[in-house]
Image 1 (cartoon, rainbow, N blue to C red):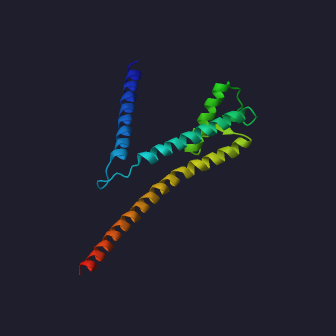
Image 2 (cartoon, rainbow, N blue to C red):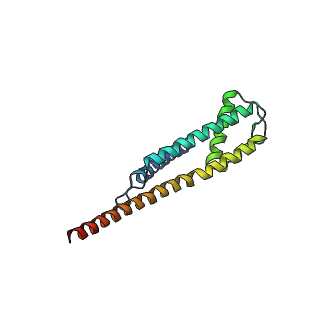
Image 3 (cartoon, helix red, strand yellow):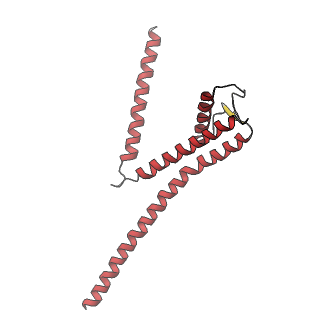
Length: 165
């Protein structure tokens, strides 16, 4: 019995340390300053989070609705009879795993579900680079505008010095 209690204690301490490390990492990422300027954008982060949530939920609903039309998800290569709630839970899980990874293989679509899974995984791969490029584009436009302001200021100084001569 003491071995089991010791294992539970070690597991609990490990889980707490991991949670502290995750929170610390997220805090450093969000609030960390690089050369006194944070590159973290709350707007883009929450937009990305909302887009992922909407895509994940939408595809989960598609898999769920299509399950009533014969496009089903096989669990461990077996067709199982599930309640509508369990079917939705499987659809949501499969949608999340497909969107954020290449899948675990524990749930497999058949029929048109395979095409949907391919489309969803493509969206999952494209979203992060698209948001990264959006940030990069915004930073580039900001730098161009700053240069234009500096150049306009320098031109105004030249014009003023010509007029004052």
